[in-house]
Image (cartoon, rainbow, N blue to C red; front, side, top):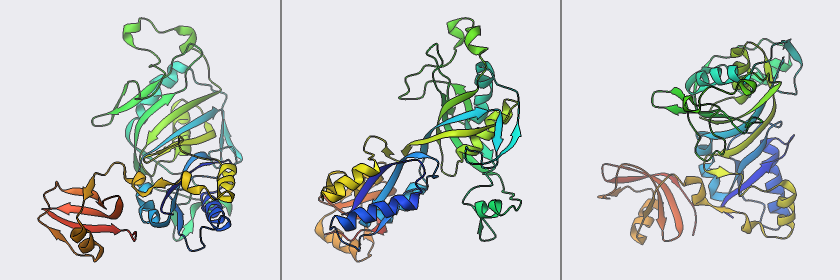
Length: 339
């Protein structure tokens, strides 16, 4: 059992609880007690969606998921800001202002490309060794430094007239109206369409649902807070769903009920994605038996005619190591103990 199980995490479940659920199913299904299990990126209990669970040797790659891009659907409700920036916290600020779609369209380009954001006080970041959320719950003032993140694209939900707003990073980070690849909704308005439909653009919004493709370290709750403030109001997240984490989407994701059912039936192999699935952006490097043996012993391969960069070294269908090639030499980054 070496690979990935993708959970569609339900509301209220923590990431470590998701790991425990997979461990329990492996144990109850008779797969063994010593199998390593870990998750590929924390997902808040109040969020749902893609939670990659690494099994066996895939746990050696789980750290790479932390550095990967993520895609989220999220809803901002305007008029109230909470202490946690989501529906769980207490209301700390209110506003009677409700933005229009025109205002939303005008503001979203500010949040496309590289931006700085201040993480939520209720986050897992550490301050002097203590979790920020522990300090916040204890009533202490939490001051976190801003961090640089990248918003690759933003897409609003379709309006009643069947249009949406899409913004995608271009070059040095300037946001421009453009269709996000794979999105069904066209831009809210384009100059070639003639005058914008005033009824649509003038509509006041109680809430709005957006889709964001973001870099590692991006806090969607902070993004929602800042969008609301830029619109002259306040807001908080009422729905957060991760639809993609690194290479993993909702397509292979399973519910906890399905996980338990397949664990009891000893059919977890049917949903286990291969080790390679976590490295779909890295090319394979075919090895002969002597080369594979050398890498397994930690030796450096010399005279390998490949471009510099990382590779997934394979002996036939067996993963041997994640390797780094530099100046025709290949070194092990992560070795896999597979037969």
